[in-house]
Length: 616
Image (tube, rainbow, N blue to C red; front, side):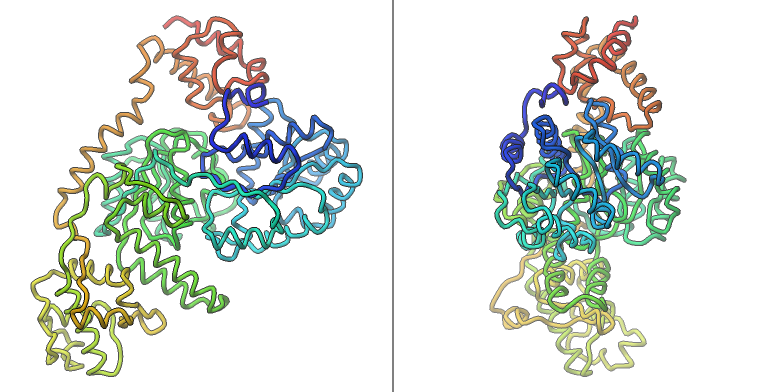
């Protein structure tokens, strides 16, 4: 089935074990990184079980774009699939429902809201009574958990699947879930007896880089122009206004950029998403409203201009880069204000419980520790998900190990200043005021409160303000200082600060970059990776093969446009490269190429051979 329908000769990782377990009727919880092949884990069982007379597989997904693309890809592969969502007319939906009742579909995609409607419940009940309900596949299953990074209340209703159809196998799939989220998924979806399949969370082709925010706009533009010119990417910003500003700036710089956020008209959002999927070299600037379920394989970078809420969100978003397995970048700039903003959103929530806020603060602290840490980014990231690993040699900390310095004296100065100010005034103050005192700046506010008379006034004049901001950021990451967002972002000492003030422990901090030397070093090392990305085909193909590859890509674009599908749904780049390199002379030779299933061979084989045979 794997080769006949999808054109692949081998399973990847735990795919085969998952497929065999689900085909046999077992429940499963599947954690597999983005690009790891989760879809095949339910698509192949759906086909096998349908052929065995078990009926249709219901795939529950919150993503209209993903439904469209996956149904398109399955149809191209010769699999009968359809979706039900809000984009369809009543007549279209009715036709699909009749197909469903006639047992003409192998897979049906639907949103969780649809599953819970009386009409859909009636359809499913009718199918179940006739023994034609084969499997429930719950995609993006982390959405069921309040501890997950993308909780969606409508997912809670999916507990009805077990209650209403206890004999129908269920599988839950996600790319991102820590231990707490996994436990919640099991409880909410009633998967206590399900077998767990947890793949490695490692995406070795992604290079993780986190840099101090100085001028985020300028930093982003330099990053794209010097390392990813003409390549597809996603830029995440926290606010809609910022998204519009950055998209406009990139367009002014000659980069094909588009803005995407929930404030745009739904039709415009869809148009921009389609353009991103279908055109080469587009950059989407977006809030987190964009991305989940985007299957575009050649996204070469994901950039964050604002810190995400937690590591799960960061991992999910960065995982949209390099789905084709080629080198890609996960790049983020962040600063103290990012920490303050995220903490404020947690603390000022009017609907979240204190328990929820405490968990979210812990998740934010873990992300801050990742950002400020000096060890391998990948080791830290995988460790968060409970996976041990070795230094990767492919992150900024591995490639240009950060210098550390004995910041014990600087830390004591800052902690002492925070303490003295609160002791003298009976109230706390924010970061800017504390740094003015440390640096001996007699501002109006400093003089007004008499803080120019404190023993800590001017004791930190040896460090510039950016250096003090770096010290403070790392003291917050080390749980020595807390930003109280409920009291005007004032600074407060934590319990562990006492040991530092007493001189009982030393404080080693990351050296803040004083120049662009580290960036130049990184750009120099990255240039070889960049060549390997853009020149991957060129490095292995001769002139004739390159000509064939160009013709094949042009042909694929035309076919994709006719079918209203992204080009990669017709054939992935890897398949076209293999065809260009091997230059098959007949259908038999073409059938042996990875990605060339039986249906695609019949539909496109003759045309592919014709394009290959054209004179160079």
